[in-house]
Length: 129
Image (cartoon, rainbow, N blue to C red):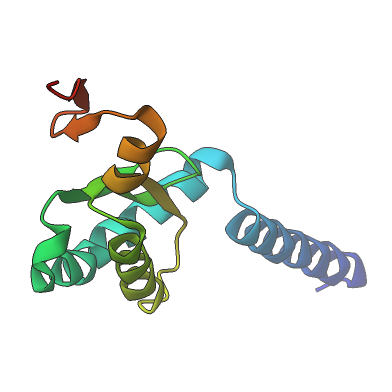
């Protein structure tokens, strides 16, 4: 085989490998999102085990979020910041390979800000006089 053939083959191989590495690491957004969502889905049982182990976290739900190029989504409420910290520590210790979208309401802080008693369902009623 000619020298030109080997040069073209080496160049094509190097280009293909480089393109694969770039796309795998930086990713086309849709590809990165799909990969992250698959990873998030596989790790949901571990996160659910943390929620199930602590009755204070009974109002927290989880799922896979399409934002942030695919993430674990935690949604719900806790009574106070200590419960939020326990949740964040527990989930943080898992070392999830994807972003985490936190959408957690802390009722004690909402009550202090609003001056009214907060009820489940994200509504409020004024204090009775």
